[in-house]
Structure formats: structure tokens, C-alpha cells
Amino acid sequence: MKAIQTAIPDLLILEPKVFGDDRGFFYESFNRQKFSELTGRDADFVQDNHSRSVKGVLRGLHYQIQHPQAKLVRVVQGAVLDVAVDIRKSSPTFGQHVALELSAENKRMFWIPEGFAHGFVVLSDTAEFLYKTTDYWYPEFERSIVWDDPEIAIDWQVQAPPALSAKDLQGKSLAGAELFE
Ligand SMILES: Cc1cn([C@H]2C[C@H](O)[C@@H](COP(=O)(O)OP(=O)(O)O[C@H]3O[C@H](C)C(=O)[C@H](O)[C@H]3O)O2)c(=O)[nH]c1=O
Image (cartoon, rainbow, N blue to C red; front, top):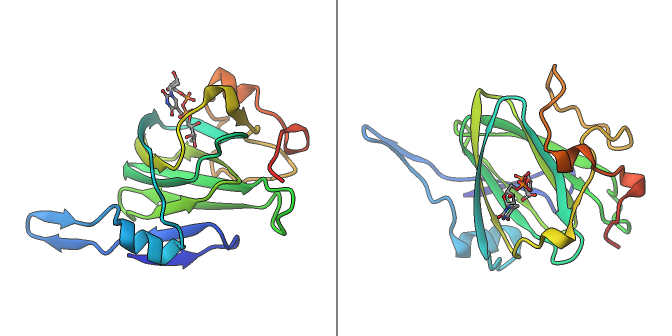
């Protein structure tokens, strides 16, 4: 496993060592000790989530204003464009984002600490998205930022308007959202 820096220091891409042979492949998708060495966090994950989406679905941009969740995300089937937006008002990279492709092929994982809004859009026919979180889901504290906020200006790499949940259709702008200090 190796860590790849991104434009925002706290956001890391983790690339596993993949062992291939005639049977297929094996890799450690999570190793607490190696994760801690690479991220400096002894993450105590409490939830494992798995969602499946069809092409053009966009889930996000989500965060919990209380009980913020750090997330370790990956894709095991298909491909998505995954995005994390820095919503920490005191951060030098406030309002900036990192976007990267996560796929079954590249086997990359994305470490997103607390303080970021997270979302993805599905690029393949379907995508299976797995992720660990460091706190539980508290719907009462869930907040959404609208996917196409011009202040954030994410290039989602999709031609048609994405398919959004009712919740996500009502996302707030960065300027109007409850944010982290
Ligand atoms: C997040 C969550 C949802 N649910 C239930 C609530 C709904 O009945 C159903 C679908 O929930 P939702 O539409 O909020 O799922 P997503 O749009 O995939 O939400 C996630 O999407 C983005 C990408 C994220 O980063 C967050 O982890 C999370 O907000 O699962 C649960 O039971 N537990 C949970 O932890």
C-alpha cells in the first residue's frame, strides 16, 4: 500500500499492492497498521457501507455537520468520478476540491477526513461503491451541498444532467450551507 498526495494535503489516494496470479488477484483492502502509518490516523471505523448505482447517478455532496464522518472509499465494480470538497472555513484550501477516478480496475482508495463534503458520479453502466466511516450515520445531522455549485465548479465529466435523489436536488450552495470552522 502506498499513499499518493493530492492538491489538498489531508486528502490521500491509497494504492494497494495487488498480487496477481493465474487464479486472479489478491490485495489487502484495509490494514489498520499500514493505514495508520500512511495517514497518521488510527482510524476506528464503525460502519462499512455498500451502494450500487447505475450510469449517470450522482450521490452527494454529503457530510454530517455533527458527528462528522471520515471516509475510506473505493469501487469494486465499474468506475466513478469521486469528489471531496474542503468545507472547513479556516482551511487555506476552503472551497477547493479533489476529483479522481476510482474503479475496479485501478483499485485506488480515497481517504477523506472529517471536514469534507463527498460525492461521486457513476461513469460506467453500473458501479458498486464500498466505504468505511469513522462515525455512525445520523440523518438529523446530514447536510447536502448542491453538485453544480459554480463557486466550487466541479467538472463531473458527464454530458447529460445526472440523476439525483430528492435530497440532493435540494442541496445548498457552499455560501448557504452550514460549514465546519
Ligand atoms: C448514508 C446511509 C443511508 N442509509 C439509508 C437511508 C436511505 O433509506 C438509504 C439511502 O440513503 P442515501 O440516499 O442518503 O444514500 P447516499 O445518497 O448513497 O448517501 C451517501 O452518499 C454519499 C456518497 C456519502 O458520502 C455518504 O456516505 C452518504 O450520504 O440508505 C442508512 O441506513 N445508513 C447510512 O449510513
